[in-house]
Length: 361
Image 1: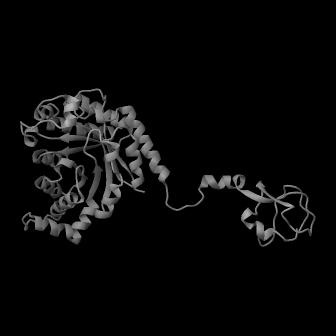
Image 2 (image 1 turned 120 degrees about the vertical axis):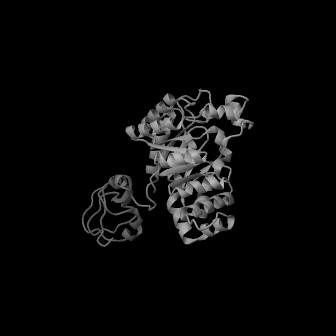
């Protein structure tokens, strides 16, 4: 089984407050997360000013401008830099999703991140995908709203960027060629983790489709993970059974706070419970071979039944159904040898409930 990294998706649940962002780091660390992830963006680089809110954003924050809502959730580059330093100081990994080229450049060249997360909404943003791949960083690719074709197309762009042949101009043909090349496939399998995701907040259980994780692994051969938007902790715990590398879950200080993602997030207590349960679930999956465990072996002699003397048996007397019984007790001859024992002569006197032993059986 692979190690599982648990990402506390703080996202924009700091509501634009650096102090709240620091608190999210502290609580994510206490809850046992391996990584705390934020979002790095310059609003005007990402959104037009006339775009409306998504339905879940309207439900959680009311009608209005998506641009204004997002602008109020923006942290400065300097604040992200301080967040990274703070994460390092408390020994939790900082991660962030870049939504524009300037933010990507900042994460790579200023914060020196070696792993980058690409949001589901950027899956067809080939220029940004290519820029991510050209950094040479490991990539976590979220695939909400995607078909297998969407993922394959994105991986073609990423393979082209990983190979980074500056003599070739980006094009669909070159992306396909890079994806189909041995080098491209090797780099994808080495450096990309694909996350299954359902992009709805909260995501209906009937639309989670965890079995798609098996399809993704079979189709692309990469490491896989799961980014959860469902209510509660049931689905992320269940996802562990698919031998995933990453579990990501939205995380907030208080689900009653105003903001687009708080209601679909876990509070610190819930997140801590999820982390414990995921660790237990992974441990419980164990190995694939079926054999008695160390704990079971010490119970074998007290749980399995053996062949015993049903009554006193005289040396030389033949064993029969009248003088043998099968019970729990101390002994070496298992009931699966019962018919082999029948008819054999007793080599000694036996008293009631004494274990029966026959040479060669």
